[in-house]
Length: 338
Image (cartoon, rainbow, N blue to C red):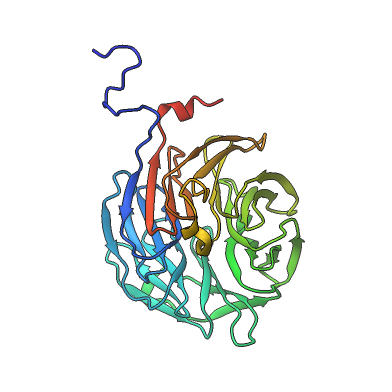
């Protein structure tokens, strides 16, 4: 029915890969998270209202109203029932994903930055920013199976990092926590003792993002020193380095192919003086093993602040300083890349 090479969907150029534009935030995006199945997409921004979308078509499901400051990070339980957010309003809130009601608020003295649920969703780590002479800290709380029984009892607090802790992740088997932040050092913390087990000083500037591989054996970091690096989750040995020509705000690992995507762009304050191509606001795809660039995906009018790969590896979402999130569904050409 179609001549060879014709695109049955009739798009003007088969290589265009039309993104789905999510217009739901009026301030820069900070964080993007898919649930385990990948049908739900959560976006956080500086506009106080985390938003839930359907990931296949970009339909907005609703917003979570209750925060009074920028929402920096979020996480969602494996059964997608519980959604947690960390905000500059000094709280970490726990929400019923379906109804959008906040059923518990963890109140802190300092702004909350990173939140992450453990494997099995029984614990949560919360990072608080340095504030008024109090250093940054990690706090571990238990997550009650029954929402009515949730308490704000902190099991253990750990400090020892200089500056903000931008990201905190649970390591393999929930034995450790990985952190990266303002001082550019990646740390591995022992959950039982609260002590720092390893430190990696490979990055020269602030670390913006950490993202674990599917099997948790390694993770990728994004830094303002214009590199993304892959580290071993247990030894913190630096395995790979991807050099970009821009500060990197986010980097993610493909769950199915040996590819990574990194995104960033020059500082938001310098953006107004440049052309959208000159600011380097595209997402770059690299070969994970060879550390070579495969290609780029343009579209944002400002630095990319957040990236997330769909669990099936067939699409990803980027969020920018421009307030837009873009869902990119890969075309067949992408899967032919060797």
